[in-house]
Length: 268
Picture 1 (cartoon, one colour):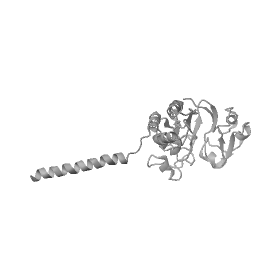
Picture 2: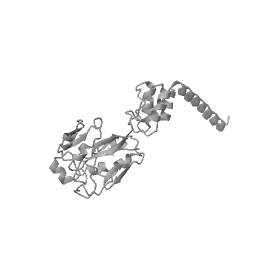
Picture 3: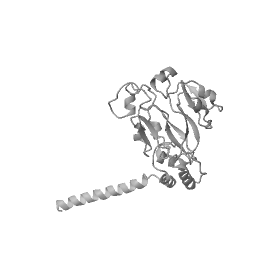
Picture 4: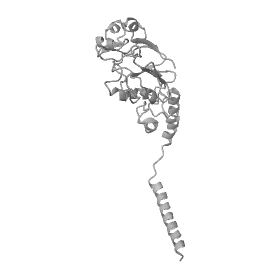
């Protein structure tokens, strides 16, 4: 037989055998498709932010399909519309997503917060923090180099006069910025409700804080005494507001001597 024809036949036979082997393997080793999970996944916005507590949208869809969770309202970016769609597919009761938005708890603007050095390096808050806590005297405040800006998939955050600020109308409450901030400055606040917020997380004593920032909390306790609903506490020389207890009366903001407590109503 012609050697060339023989070689072609051998290659063809080998290809046929391998093809059959792959076909059998694809049947034997096939992974069952979870159609319910796929349908749920199509409803989700695809942010893969992890705000639901699972490993992205695929993880949440799988957990709903397998009954690991029955809470259809864990997708903050999707809101109540997505919750209703999931409930219809999964045969569950639709939960209610409480609308919220991120707020940067700092007022350390350029003219208010003192600086200890000029930082020339990688434009990253995380990197700048490694160098004496950052360029500002207050090592707890916003460094202002935009790690949260880069992390936000909705372009809801911008740096304004050295401090990050969130546009609540564009924020989808995915919490990507919350996870990214090296100083844990970003908190979630409810929309459409007046709430008092302490825009400072400085843990230094009042005398030290005054030297670092004109708008820093000095832990004077006046807000605690003014609050009739036990919503304000001072811990580590800094006031904190429990949003669940706060009624938005504004009494704590009136007595704050440094005006670091703001009455905020976020609107989408």
